[in-house]
Image (cartoon, rainbow, N blue to C red):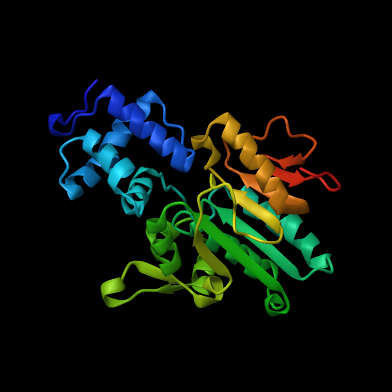
Length: 285
């Protein structure tokens, strides 16, 4: 089977080799029907590097890319980044009505949250808004931090900048838009910037979930990893669920995407709602 562009055709062998390389470095399991996606996204890299075949590109990645620069570009090109403010709003409603009120009553004033697969930052900023609203008037009395990670370094730059279009804010209620975003003027008309009050509590970092060691220390109260697991094999999903459990404090929460579920880990997680799980207390993962 060949790609639509004869100048950038890909053989079965080259597709399988690239697919395996992508899987090794990202955990992403690409099926045969993703062939066109791989071709279209990597074709730009071939043109940029003035390469005439995917075989040459594979050789560059595995033989001459000693610093891993092109590997990073390939990962950035191949990853999918789809997110929105207040996406799957029931998670944030559950935080506001159940999780955060309980945490406010606890003696521990150190709270940690992790947005894993943060993409361009909308999820992390939505979480920051939710926290600001829940801790209105007392936020400065708490030690609250949000870690936002992604494998794609390009989208993390967008997230750190915190600049979005008005269209991207369509799910944000008007009152929250006025409270937490600055409207652009002149050349920036139609765009908004996140206010520093949200940015100050978020750290954006590059992180590959398949790395054997994660650099974080301490436990999280809530982890968001939504619409990431769908790209992984069942085996890797199970491994990551167990690793997330080791990063959660007993009683902490894991939020998944609407099509993601935890199976065969009933001793570690208890479901508390659609795509929401609580780490059981007193059980070691």
